[in-house]
Image 1 (cartoon, helix red, strand yellow):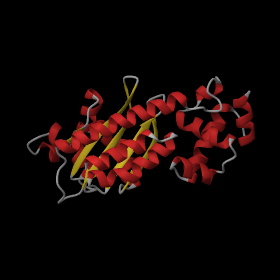
Image 2 (cartoon, one colour):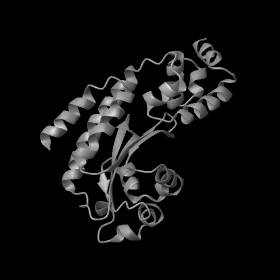
Image 3 (cartoon, one colour):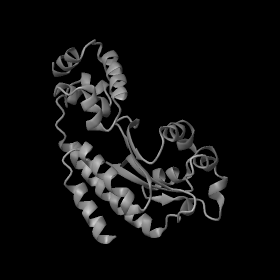
Length: 236
């Protein structure tokens, strides 16, 4: 396990873009933590959800969690308060987990018997989280898993901070660009490079329809009606 984690650390450290970092995490973490369900949630500059990458987790669960689960998630609450990884037995020992609102509203229906969450931090703030879940019959997460997740989160936090500091968006100082979220600025950057909606979706790990809807919001914010006009307005 130590060697495999070192390989993961190296993969994280050598990521040349945020997209590459996310791809490498999604490709590797399930094997390291012996689970079929995991995800990476990243926030934008306004603390809104910018991206969600999940494996083995349905879109319906993600939607329900965002609508009603996050607010009552005791593990997430611990992570937000302490900027440290946690699992359900650490936060709610002695069987209290299955009595919690999160388990009853979300996890029980989707067979998330055990959960573990770790923080991605930057400049003293929570800028994302890494989530794991195990099904009924699987072992609960333990102290070793927490220590390993803490190490992974430290490497991800450092890498993401470096990438965001050096990220050369085409419109870094444009006042109009500040109307856009981080994700929307990423899309604008790729539009300016000539990528299609499908290619942008592949690059950012989102659906083509998500790109389309994001562009509609961006057009409204910048009061434009076409991709070329959007790029020209941001450049000027």
